Image (cartoon, rainbow, N blue to C red; front, side, top):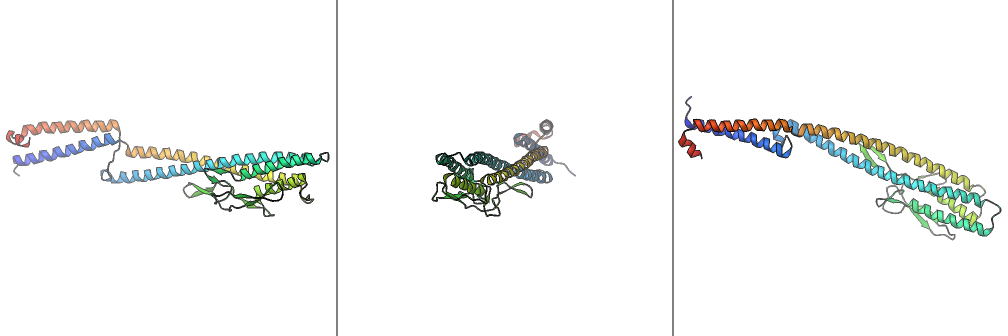
Amino acid sequence: MRITNRTMNNNLLRNLNRSMGRLDKINNQLASKRQISVPSDDPVKAGVILRLRTSVRETEQYIRNTDSAISWLDATDVVLSDVINVIHPAKELATTGASTHLDETSKKALADEVAQLHDSLLQLANSTHGGRYLFGGQKTNEPPFEAVPGQGKISTVNFKGDYGDIEYEIGVGVTMAVNLKMIEDSDGKTVPFGQLFDVLGQLYDELSGTGEPDEDSSVLGSLEEALDNVLQLVSEVGGKQNRVELASERLKDLRLNVIQLMSEAEDVDYAETIMHLKMEEFAYRTALSVGARIIQPSLVDFLR
């Protein structure tokens, strides 16, 4: 095969262009800190990186879900603690009001305190978190408990919410209800708020003398039952808090592991890449030097 000057020129330019392409690729890797700029650089590794990125995004969404769930449960726990702080004074007032040594004026003063506790309980039952009502089921955009004014000083309270669950997905195929689902007891009262509203109304009527005493019902016994229900709900919320916190910690560890895998697959090794850059620069400069010697001066002048 006959080698002409034109053949040598074409081969030299082709090899120089390839060397410049490799230099450009290495420079892009150093500038972007990524081994792969386009999928064609390494289709197999590009697919692995895309799957890892998807996994990171999914894990981060689950972490946001657990953070929202923890926030909701924390708000619920605070409200239930305040409800307990309403029940204890109500029990004291019921015990004091049962004394036969009190006159009507003293009982009326105790009844006024019960009315204040009733109003506080209504405010707690309509508590919100992030603009959503905590105890209305899935109807979070309107107050779940509505006071209907009556003849006495204490209003009748009706439940307007629903009995649905508010669920968060805290893992792949794992959902958990974070709201306290209102249930009805054998008397059709919502637990625990409906029980408490009724028993406070009964206590007010007995102290103020506006209603007939219910011989078949004990106010103290009803308050004890309501307190037990609230404590049971506090325990339920605490268990959910522990579960979500454990899930959150596990997801954060998983996220770090996946990010580490993605970094190993995607990020450049600076020491190795710089070494390759120096080698390519040396090869390119050598090719230029050799090309200047083998090409005819007239042709070199033409190429310039």
